Length: 237
Image 1 (cartoon, rainbow, N blue to C red):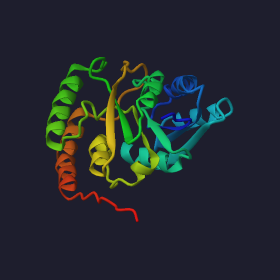
Image 2: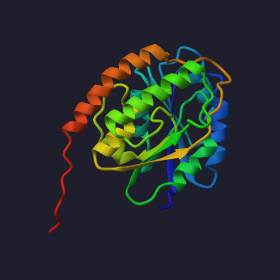
Image 3: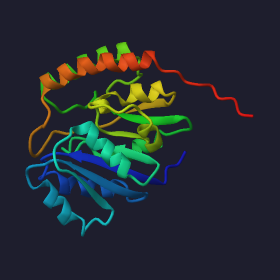
């Protein structure tokens, strides 16, 4: 299957020094495909929004949606997806650690029936040792509990069908469980090995401990949703 149009959604909060370089990279990676780049400014208190506005003159395909107050990454992603005009959406983190040059790899992995392609950073992750260890533990527990066939659900680099995403149950932190939720609705998923880079500017807006505590609660919630899912086999007349 050849995808000819793509919306790229990038949620950001206080990433003023990262926006210009990342937008340039995304545009270069997708020069052979029609695309739009949607930045969702999730209540930034620095100059992220003004930097984005100044870049619109250079990048005509850049769209900006602004949250007055921070609503979290999942809500920012959903805002961007709702604003997208194309059937397929790619997401990546706004800190520059995901490499936009990997987006074509995700596009090439799409075949009939696939609704989500997830990036897998495990072979090249560039983070602190505690983040790497906690990620391995969390992914192992989640995979065994949800059977979501995904080694690295926390990777921000993903590709999915817009319609499928908007059909998912919405809740805060849902972005960490997209493979399980897509599989719950009957969609197929696949993972692709991608690169991972060190953060050059700024600092993470998300702590390790707070994500762990929220993730445990959400894990049981998603497992509850899975147990109550029913996929109808529709007979066409």
